[in-house]
Image 1 (cartoon, rainbow over the protein chains, first blue to last red):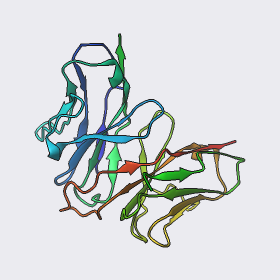
Image 2 (image 1 turned 180 degrees about the horizontal axis):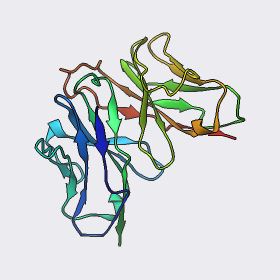
Image 3 (image 1 turned 180 degrees about the vertical axis):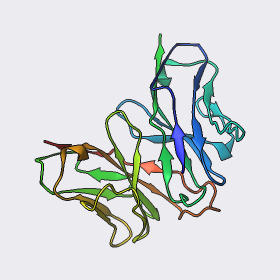
Image 4 (image 1 turned 120 degrees about the vertical axis):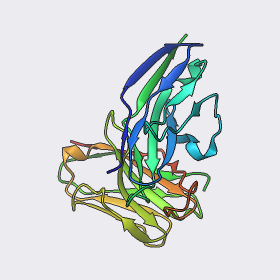
Length: 111
Length: 120
């Protein structure tokens, strides 16, 4: 069965500090991994996906198939990064049409 | 339209009432998804349409939940005889291309603002 686990419900860091939001997954086959973000009073939106291998707003995420992880990282957090972050997975076994979300991690960047 | 539109934004229902939630996806988007998001949780998959065909309804929690997309554009999620545990935000998302296991990169979801349902 497909599953996405985000072990931290809340992560609080100071502005300028590095941040890492953890995501682990279970899958069967070749999944596609995503990070979605929801800023205050805004819609859930795509932040980045692993196949793009790009940096968005300074965030990067590397897919580690050996550890089945897709942690989101940023070297220097900004106050505007404060938001709810969801790791998501799609593809694999019979779940190809679904995107499965983790429970989310709230990032709070303090001044 | 410019984005995914959902209505109503807020709905308060008495237990036992029927409710209908509407989703108007981005024009031309083939795929449409419904998710349920309870307080403090991530979105939980309910059902998926490709055009007018409902290809996956495995996430619908009971037979009180019914979704349709008769003309392949607007979709309605109907909940009959609402219960308190149905209280949640219902999210609709659409994507441009049909999904397949080999369709890598085509499944980026664009979400609506959600419909918040409160059952008293």
